[in-house]
Every structure is written in structure tokens, then in C-alpha cells.
Length: 458
Image 1 (cartoon, rainbow, N blue to C red):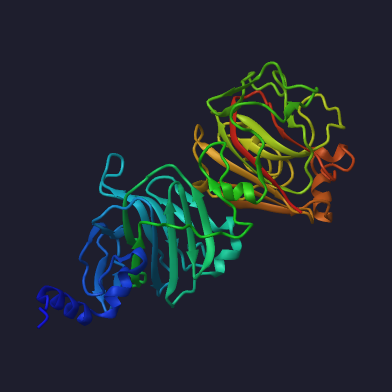
Image 2 (cartoon, rainbow, N blue to C red):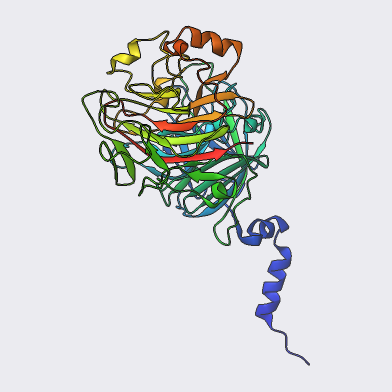
């Protein structure tokens, strides 16, 4: 008679009795973060919002004047793919999912901080965008990907996928690609579910629901995003493989001045501009326009393009990025062209000149004022990001730190009227060239630039 291995038999019996759901949750390298019954493995942090496990869901409820509240994993995570379903019942509040985050360290007493994937049911519709809680604020506003604003549906469950692999973070909502950020801060941290602070009785008692929370931490494969997703790349003078694949090129490599020359000659200025520490910097000459090194321009001409650049102002500084510069005007000071204004609005007198603020930061200089919110302007001495998009149909957009601040149509009647009211009315066909140089301005103040990248549009 053959002997029966009782230990094997018991194991087989237990396996046969194991619910299929538990097996499915751990297959393919996936692990559940919520068991559907209680909050084991999680802990509340910061505010006083109520979190409960109910009917296979984590339910967070707003509490008046509690501050932002979080339910955080006790475990920290490095590289991962996270998936979960989220529903929010009110358009008057929002929520979010913290990734690689931290709590109660120096400078953040009693607070959670780190990157957050936004859940925004308001008319703004920035769900899936990336916010840096209690630190840098918005990293990826959905002005950068307006088509994705329709991905999140209020009042029903939405499937959210978050990929943190190396320095890259990608988000998808209901399988629609939303945000793409490259960032070197926080290589690991906890994951947390947010209930946002509310301040009125009407906002209190509103619920946000989370379920089917699972994570994969090995054998990770990033989603292949389609062409046309703008990448917020916080690594200076660096392009991702995705950016290179889809036509982006660096105009400044952080080391040389290749591709740039003086607006007044055929070589790069011998003074007034320095390349150091990955930045290209124009020196101060006590505010004397083009009196030191003078403006510099790209050797190449551009017609339709998406150009992005980081800039850092010193107190009271003035500069700009000009486009469609032809150099035909032979002007005495700075070369003539459409200008994305780079300015310290508080200290430089130019901000008070012109019409209706059309000489302030990110404006189309002397033509159209930028509509800015103070929260999207980084302090003087910090890096800001500027962006100009010129479409093949001559529609133009200006962005500041990811938020669109103005748009216009080059060559339209409205544009021509604005030119007729400006200092540029003396120049025939101002701003209407089919192609032109890009220009960095020497306005006599110390200003630094980096991460200047461009994609030509067709």
C-alpha cells in the first residue's frame, strides 16, 4: 500500500479551500494594499477626517476645519505601479493620492508632503495632474494636457493607474494618459489617500471612496504614452527617450553655446554671457539694454514650434525670450521680435508701463498681458518655467509654470490692432515673418536660463 504524505495532503486541501479572489490579488506580482475589511496596514496622519472600511471600500469623510487629512501606508515604496478605483461625490472639494511621500520632518511639522496625484471634480478638471503637497505646489497642471480633462467622471468609480519608475511618474485615468513628470526628489516614501480640508458646513460630511487598491513592485513595465504628451522634465538640460522619440531637441546642452550667436554678429559674444553649472547666464550691466554682451539668437530659424525654457531672475531683473526675430530691423538696442516677457514684476518699473499690464512676466510684451495667479509664480531667485507654442495655423500660447496665461492668433485683425497701439507700430509687418530666430535678451540684468528645449510642429 502506497504511503500518503499527510503534510502535502493538508496543504492541497487548504489551497482548494482558498478563495479565488485572494489568489487573483497576488498573481502577476500584484499585492493588495486594502483587504476589503479593515484598515490594517494603514494609519491616519495630519488632519481629522474620518476614514472607515465599509462594504469593501475605504470611505473618507470631510470634517470642517480639520486641515488636509491622509490615510497612509505603514510601509514605504520605491518603484511601483499602483492601481485603484476612486469615486468622489462632491464637486465642492477634492482628493488625491500621495506617492513617495513623508510626514512631520523639518520644515513640515505635523504635515504630509510629497507628490500627489490630484482628484479634482471641479470645473477646472485637473484630475490626474500632479501636485507637490506642502512643498512646490503644482508640477503638472492639466493646462499641459487639456484633452485629458474629460477622463475623470464625477459620481462614479474611476480607475487610476500611477507609475513611479526611477525618476519618472506617469498617471492614467480610465486608461487615458494624463500626466508625465520627471523629478529627482523623493526616491521612496509612503502612499496615502487624501481627504481635503473644508471650511464650511456645506462642504462637511462629503465622502470620497477608494477600492481595489493594489501595487506591483517588481518586473515593472511603464505604459507607452502616445505622441503629444508634454513632459514636465525637472532634470536640467536632459531629454527623456520619449521626448527624443517625439521630436524634442535641446537648444542648450548645459555645457556649450553651440547653436547660438550674437544678434549683432556671426559668432557668440566674447563677454557678457557665461556658461556655468549647467546654466547660461547674462551678466549685469546696471540695466543698460544690450550694452554688454548683447542679445543672443539661435542660428536656426523656426516657424511652428513648442519651446520650453527655465529661467531664474535676480531682484529687479528684466529679460525675455523673443521669437520670429529676423534681424532685418537693424535696431540700436535689443533686436525686434515677439517677446515672452521675463521680469521681476514687483521691482522693475517696466511692469507699471504699457497698457493693462502687458509688460509683466509671461506677457506678450507691449501687446497682451498674461493672466496669472500669484500661486503659480515662483519667487525671485527660484527657477520658473516659460513656454511658447506656435501652431502651424499661427495660433500662439504662452505658459508660465505649466499654466496657460494667454493666447492669440498671429496675423489676425485683433493682433494687427494691438500692434497699432504698441511701440511696434513703426515696424512694417511686425511679428508676421514666416520663420525667425529665437532670442535671449540682454537687458542689462543678471538672468540665468537652462533646459531650453524645442519641438518643431507640422
